[in-house]
Image 1 (cartoon, helix red, strand yellow):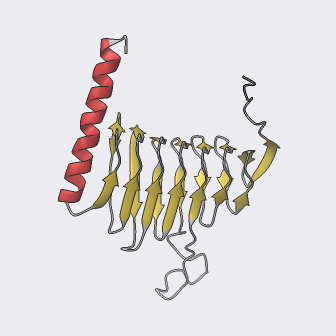
Image 2: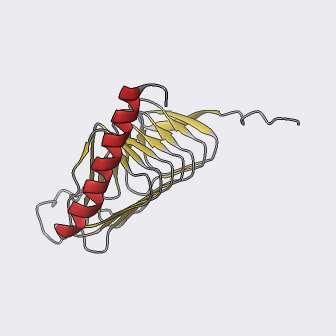
Length: 191
């Protein structure tokens, strides 16, 4: 790096990453992260479930991976950037390798029943896994609802609200979200 301030910033982010990797398990939280975990912002981990980050994960702004059940698992792949993402998990949320998640909300549960008797402890609450496949970019203010699966290389537009399955290589936008167009593949080099 040619810029000493940039090098200092990265060194500080790596040190903060090490701090989280050591301090969170010492506090009884089931947290792990791979090599080169960098925290440029801050992170609040909460709950009885597991939070697993792969190698080369970067955290910006304030990221909140919260689990709400002992069997809940939040898994973030390698080379991901979480920038202000708020994650609420009762079962399973997976973010694939090379993904970017901005200041969006991801949840695999409605947290409350949608029935009229929602105050009744017996009223059912929807819980269904969320999967972002490899190289998905989720823009700010998006809502990823229970049961959503987003295909690889897709982009989720600002403020989109997603529920259900979306194919790979899609530009997804709106409320409710729809596929606006297919994303063209990256050019290949003919060498």
